[in-house]
Amino acid sequence: MLLDLHLPDRSGHDVLEAIRADPATRLLPVVMLTGMATASEKIRAQSEGVTDFIPKPFSPEELLPRVRALVMLKLFADEHEHAEHVILTLAKTIDARDPYTAGHSGRVAEYADRIASQMGLDAVARNDMRRGALFHDLGKIVIPDAVLRKPGALSPEERAIIEEHPVVGNDLLSPMKTMRKTLPVVYHHHERLDGSGYPEGISGPAIPMTVRIVTAADIFDALTTDRAYRGALSVGTAFEILIEGVQKGWWDRDVVDLLRDIVDATGLSASGLHTGARTD
Ligand SMILES: [Fe+2]
Ligand SMILES: [Fe+2]
Image 1 (cartoon, helix red, strand yellow):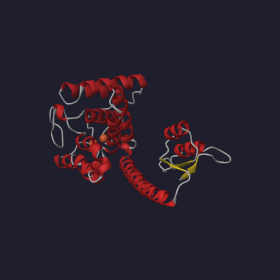
Image 2 (cartoon, rainbow, N blue to C red):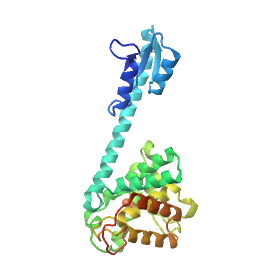
Image 3 (cartoon, rainbow, N blue to C red):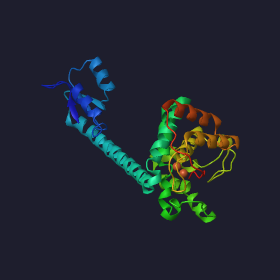
Image 4 (cartoon, rainbow, N blue to C red):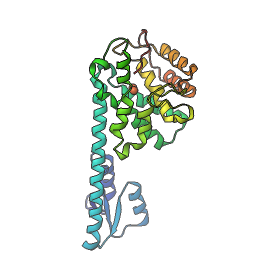
């Protein structure tokens, strides 16, 4: 959009603000045409998210290359947004395929984000982690329903199929450049600190904090919601199991403690008592 600062009925600032506030147009490149714009007007436009300024009078030779470059940029931005939207929808579809896990990834992302915020992780790391959490079980797309929704214990063969999902998720997302930083979360969310997890069996400092956070959030949500193989456990029982895991050297104690504080503070209610501790 080529936008004049001085319009007959409203100011260019108002238009720019409206464009940035609307999710449908927030990424639209906006070039402000400035005649006698003051420095303060320019600073204001910058803080409102203007893309570029072109002083008036301008020549077509000056205007055209800039407009072309911005149209290209917008096309890339659209493609990127579209691809993210497709993957997000896909991740939700996978959660919804098993009625027991509907909303699981969203809740894991939410718990993980709160832990990370308590821990003071920076915004960029948090954002990457959050996306990783939303896609962590994407690889379940290849697991047959008969295995995914099996009530009761899994055979070693079925267990091996389930344990493929972090690898498959990683394979699906790795061609996408924008997903690269979220991959460790997807690939390693079933690792344990003592190296007894999967798929790589990495241990201790090799497991990044963002991964430890998502792992704890994932287990907590799996334990406290109904699953095909058991009903939801109470929050108290879920933490008993998590603490047991900490003592065995599987999970990060600080992460589990923070999650406990967060759950206590938000008053997540206990939802029934059952047995079994499968958490895939
Ligand atoms: Fe998983
Ligand atoms: Fe999960």
